Length: 292
Image 1: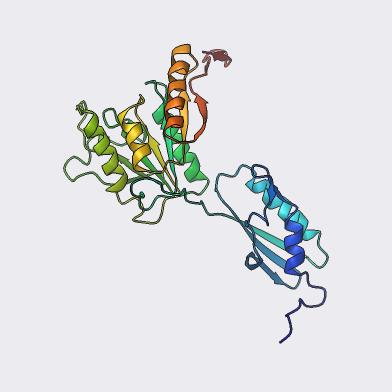
Image 2: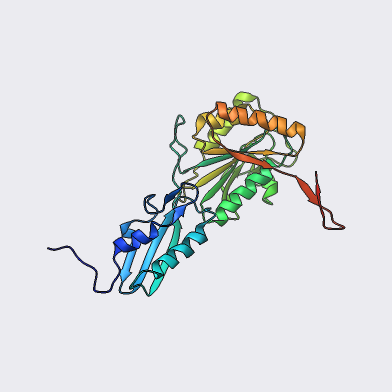
């Protein structure tokens, strides 16, 4: 049998892919066709109607809508195309697991850390997780600050509400959340030595069924202050995709944050960047910005 040819006047898949190859990914500096974001099987043609599915590697792509508009314009510029439909999807790629054993049901782990307490790590961790969820990712949130868990308070969950039935995943605002604070009655102190912290982190990573209802794209881990047990255990027990360092705009906090950067570099964990939290406040009287 001869090769199937497009109907007279109907655009070909080759022409569609050639047009879409003019769209560049601004971070990878390559076109979306050579990157595999759109393939031959992602193109459907029926007469003058063309439907294309573009699959990005993250739902949080900042140029997602720009790419969609550009693709529609390029398709409509092709002879024979009367209607163009572009569907944007995201398939988050998994980080290669290099720990003693993989964290089942988790594709990527993002740690939020600082060597200084009180700079807003938990606030940043919660907002990062919610932002990823808003973009359409499947997200988990692990409170690894075992001796000072604040995630329940951040999410409006009562302390100790799981004390009688054991620790389990809680779904809140679309996030899969686990915190030791779910087991602790208000005011209860956790007095653990270093080895117990390491064991606790390991159990929260491997004994919690993170992927029970579908694989997570991201697990955001809220780490405690310091450069010791919890951070080291996380890096040794799992393949951490990267870490976000949180600091405040003062010399002491910045100095300690640099130590956190040094630690993660020694642990071969990529540092995604630094968030300067509490940089300013808005005056309630005049509405002006006052830098701290």
